[in-house]
Length: 367
Image 1 (tube, rainbow, N blue to C red):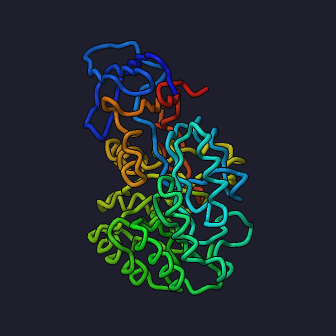
Image 2: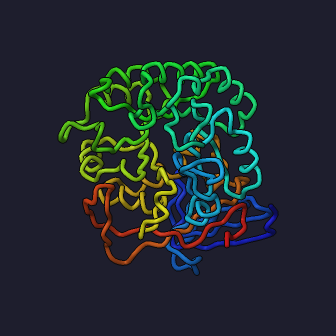
């Protein structure tokens, strides 16, 4: 994609990777960044308040033709995300079609391959049948599509895994991840079925726990205290992702965790087809605004939506403002007043809210 030459000026240019936070100008040539020039004083900005590297959504659902939860890639791109990681939508039996779709898209797509061979292609839970857990087939698919796949998706929730022993499911996922050198993207089981401490003890450095700010059926908090097993897992290098979704983000949990110094490593939407009927557009800037409403510092929010997830999925060159990097940008506007925000159970918080004003992929404005 060759966009010729382009110059964008902004009141505030932010790049967590390079520690940039100032007014400035970004110059683009042939789809890549040529120069980043911090400036002082007034500039003539692009439409919006903040220019960031393209946002990276670590956990969402892509491709309605391949997944019962999937959202069209062009919608995700227009919402401000330039790199999106599909969580468990494709398994070994369906990844070929998914890979073909991803190759044709301006949205940069990565995949956490489902341990279930059928992925999320059926209305039945992905771990409904033991036959769908095929370790050899999953490993073979990863070796064939290694550039696309960043993790092995293992969701042991009672919804995804209603009858099969969740311990055997996680063990199979770790076997795949160990042989292929990938992390596990993990959805926890409710503690009455399997103690959280026992689940987390099995995870390794670099594995990622998603849905970290749920209230139920599992919760990382005990009132205002982070559970010791969660702190121990983080100390060992286990990472924690938001995964907002339709039922996995609670303001009280997030606020208590952040007040206790437990910030998420990555912020993600868990965007799915169920969000399309909602009155408020569910996108990454909205979820970022909700983290701001519960006290997460702006600098940490920007890092958790750009540099941190990009490093996990192998897309750092799409999430930094450096000479030679891809010219992927998300331009955000900020509301003048604090607006009402809702968590997934309807509780309210108020904050200034970011919305997407413009998106560029390799220097080209996304229409």
